[in-house]
Image (cartoon, rainbow, N blue to C red):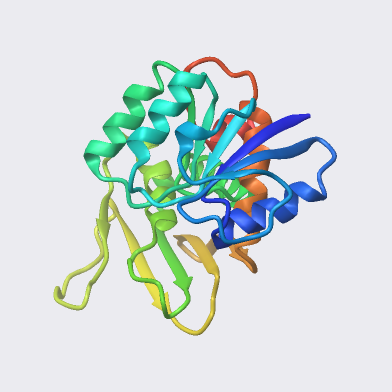
Length: 251
C-alpha cells in the first residue's frame, strides 16, 4: 500500500487524484495540503505543510509553482519522495528542485500521461531509423481555445526527445509565413492549433519520399495526467535520492 500526501488536494487535479486513488486497492491518500480547506475529504487537510505530521511514502504536488521551495524543504526534512506536477517553474525554481534531488527522490515530467511518455520513447526510436534516411519531422499539437502557451510544453518535450538523440542538430521552426525558402532538412516544424474544448492532441509526422508515418496521441480527459501521477507515486515509493522522470517509470 502506497501512502500519498496530495499538495493542492482541493484543486481540480487534486480531486481527480482523490477519486482515482479511492478506487485503487494499492494506494491511499493519508493527507492533503491546500491554502484553503473548503472541501469534504476523507483525509485530513493542512493549510500549512509544516503542520502535517502524517507519515507517508510519497507526495504528489499539483499546486502552483509559488512556494515550491518550502515544499521541497519539507520533502527533505521528512525524507519523502515527491512528484512535481506543478508547471511554470522559473529557472531558479528548477535549479532548486534539481539541488533538492541530491537529498531526496524527485520526479518531474513535462507531461504525466503514460501514453505521452510512451510516445516520447517511440518517436525517439523512429527518428533514429528514419531521420538519416530522408524523412522530415513535423509536430502538430492541438488544444482548447483557453490555452495560453503555444506551442505546448508537451510538443517541445517531444521535439527535445528527438533532438537529444542527434546532438541538438535540429532547429525548431514555429512559423514559416515570413520566409520564402525551401525547408531545411535539419529542422523540426512545430505547429499549434487552438479551438473548442480539445484536451490535447499531438501528432509527430515523419514525411519521407512517397510515404508518411504519423505517431499520435489524443487525450480525451485530464484524468490521464492524474492516473499517471498515481502510477508514478507507486514507482517512487522507497526510491533513493535522485532526479527521476516518467521515462524511468516506463522502463
